[in-house]
Every structure is written in C-alpha cells, then in structure tokens.
Amino acid sequence: MPYELVIALRYLTARRKQAFISVISAISILGVVVGVMALMVALGLMTGLQREIRGKILGTTSHVSIFRAGSEPFENYREVVDAVRALPRVQGAAPAVYGKALLTTSAGSAVATLKGVHPAQERTVTDLAQQVEDGSLNALDAGDEAIPPILLGRELAGTLGVGSGDVISVTSPQGRLTPMGMLPRVTKFRVAGTVHSGLYEFDSAWAYIPMAAGQRLFSDGDRASLVEVRIDDIYAVREVSASVLDRLGEGYLTTNWIVMNQSLFSALWLEKVAIGITIGLIVMVAALNIVATLILLVMEKHKDIAILVSMGASRGAVTRIFMLQGAVIGAIGTFSGAFLGWGVCRLLDHYKLIRVPVDVYQISYVPFTLLPQDAATVVLGALIICFLATIHPARGASRVDPAEALRYE
Image (cartoon, rainbow, N blue to C red; front, side, top):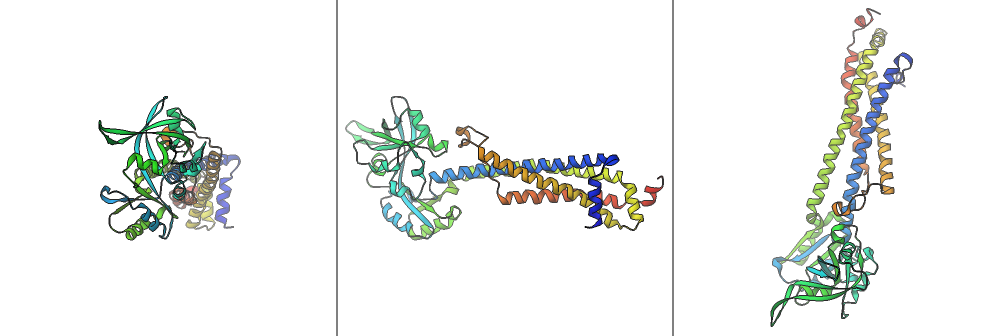
C-alpha cells in the first residue's frame, strides 16, 4: 500500500487530540451520502413515473395509427390490415371506429369516447382483454343482439351509476334525416363489464362497443376511422411508419404514440432534468464540506507536513496525501449513498408507499425505477465532483514552507 494512502487513512481515523478532524470527516461523508441518495431517489421517481404512464398508455392505445388523407372514407380497411400485417416488425393490426357520444342513465350522464372494435383483432394491438373487469372482451362479439353490449371505463361506470347487465342510452351527434328534420341517433346498450386501464383519463371517459354498432352510430356503411398497428419495438415507430406508407402508397397518413404524447413525455423529461440538477446541488454542497475539511486538516497538520518534506517527501507526495483523503471521503459517501438510494427505491416501489390522486397524476401510486445508467451517472458524477474538491486544499498543503512551520515548534 503506498505510504501516501496510509498517511491519508491515518489522518481520517485520528483519535484523541485530532478527534475533531474525524468528526468533520464524518460530517463530510454524511453530506455526500445524503446528496447521492436523494439524487438517486429523485431519478428513480421520475423514471418510474414516466415508465408507468408510458406502459399504461401503450396498453390502451396502438403504437402506430393509419388514417385516410383528406378525411376520405376508410372503406378498404380490410385490405390495409392484411397489407400491414405482412410487414416486418408488425405484431398486429386492427381496424377501429371512434366517436364522441352522450351516455345517459337514470343516475346521470357523461360524454365519452366510444371505440368500436373487433375483439379478436383488438387483442393483437392493445391490452384491452387483460383490462376488462366483471366481464370479458369476448362479450363484444355478441354485436347482433337487439341491445348490443358495451364495456365502460371503471370511473365512467361509477359516474353513470351502472353495473353489468344495466341498460344505458347512447346519443350520437351524427344524426339521421327524418321527416321532422335531422335527429340524433339514440341507441340502447347493455353494460357487459368494466375496463380498468389504470389511467384515469381513459377509465373516466372511454367505452368500447362492437365494430358494427360503432359503424351504425358514427359512419354510413362499412367504414373504419383508422387502422391501429402494434410493433415489436416501441421506439421504431418512425421506421415502421415509413414502411407502411411505402406499402400502401398515396392517400394515407400515419401517426404514432410518440407524436400523440409528445407534450406529456417532454414535460416529464424536463421535470426529471430539473429535479436532477436541483437535487444535484446537494452533492455540490457536500463537496464544499470536503474542501473545508481538508483546509482544516492542512492547518492542523502543518507541522507534520513540514516534517514529511524535511524527511524527503516530495511536494507531489504531499499533494497526493490530501487528494487521497478527499477521494476516500467522496468514495465512501458516494457508494454508501448509492446503496441506500437503491434500497429506498426498492422499498418505496415494492410497498407502494407514496399514493397520489389518480385524477391528477393518472396513476394511483408513485413507482420508483432506478435505471443502471442513471445510477452510474450519479456515482461517476459524485466521484468527479469530490475529486475536484480536493485539488485546491491539496495544492495548498504542498506549498507549506517547512522552515516557517517548524520555527516556533
């Protein structure tokens, strides 16, 4: 072991008259521990929140959506579905009909987004089948009944005060021409179950009906609003969209989950960066504590420094002694804080200890996910900051004049 490191560790564990130095060193280590731990918990919080929301959104919506350009009728959707399914990286494709409607019961009313789906094809593009409660997605296959089925979002069902088996009225703004003029279309639906996606925005304002019933409500004839596509890599949507347009030719447009949710994820990313920088200042404050500790140590050990220089120690060796001491403080604090931060993230995520209002944050609890690259960045950054904090005090120690330091001893 180099003698510089031996002396540095000796100074950190000083006893008796130099116990004050050990206390100051412990405080410096504690500052680094708190800073690193807080930064890791904050990054875990923002990453977990972003991943949870993204996962729930992608479980409810498709990765890529295909439209007809110029609001043209989408009548050849079956051919489009077959053509898209043959493309590489595509896992599934399904048509859908969308529209807004007023849902009315004796207990209340609400405006909701209705989505007409084919259950078998819908399974290939979303996780709707796993989100159905008190029923099954297969219930939407019974679309030829006198009263077609409907699946309501959990919160929407609570607003309407209905449960499985109840009948509701659905009024479409797209009317029908009668001798009395244009009248809205009113259709009765039987509640076949509820859907819980985990996102309040969907659970409170979305409902699902058979494709045929949706076409009767929102379109004239056998048409779809769009074709939804799921792929094997959620970050390859731009490449797949280009392939889709090349295959289909002119007259089609695409959008994807990144474009549709860009503002949300941009805000979450900005919050993550802002919180990381803000809490990272704690590490900077801890580095200032290291500077103060080393300056006090140099003042306390000026006689020892003079003796070392007199015995032949080089100025570089003196510099390394105090840089190693600061580096040891930083390393102990950084790795201890990293371990505690990782443990706190696991504990908070496993027991779901932080609950939040679902109508504000879309989720019921705050998840914590600490990415390896985030943890590595924090550890590396903290070590660099702590090392830089040692340079000035160490250089000051190397400039101590032995004659002046020993003159009055």
